[in-house]
Length: 266
Image (cartoon, rainbow, N blue to C red; front, top):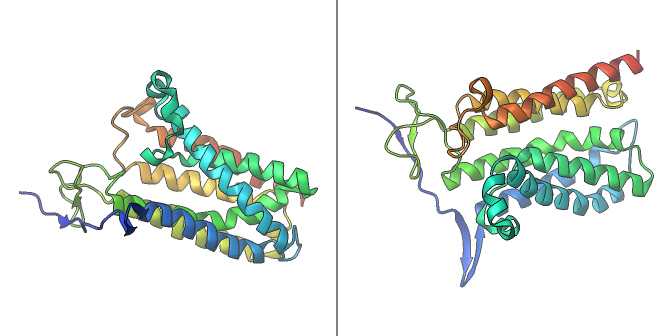
């Protein structure tokens, strides 16, 4: 007999007024953007300053477009290219769900480069401050995944806190969304804030960006060991998941950025 914690049946729709439905997932995006924006306004002015608060205000729109467009395109290309080749018009149907963090990250990187080029800002130094607030959005996003009962974990009959998810079959599973919220959100945010508290590290161009990339990559790789792979992909090279394969380059690039930042400022 399996023992499992009942899944809290939370309505994915937070507020509904007539035909207008506001979902928790949308509120997670809004909360991540708003809280990240407010913190970023302070981060960019810390010594040595890299931008003004008003420039961060302007940047929010660029970053939001980068997240949405990059996240959707990344999902289409990385996770379901075969499907969208047959129905390419559905690639624009973002209301049907399907977003990729790695695609969103690429979208934000491009948006940040374009924004900084347009404003004559040092884009790497600017990115060093912006990455410190990204885990806020990651945390709320994973909580929204949990509320939706999606992206659940692997079968875990011997784990006392396992849950039976509505769409995950009768077996108790790891609540991997909560693991990832803790790793990619809380833990990564704490580490970046600790590093960013050092003026010497803030002055090392690229160090904080590297710490974010490597930190997220490690957190995602660990989290994927508990998360059920996408059904249409399964396990890939050497038993790794798509999320792990996409995160490995982040760890390598992040480590290289930190090492180069240390060398340039030695």
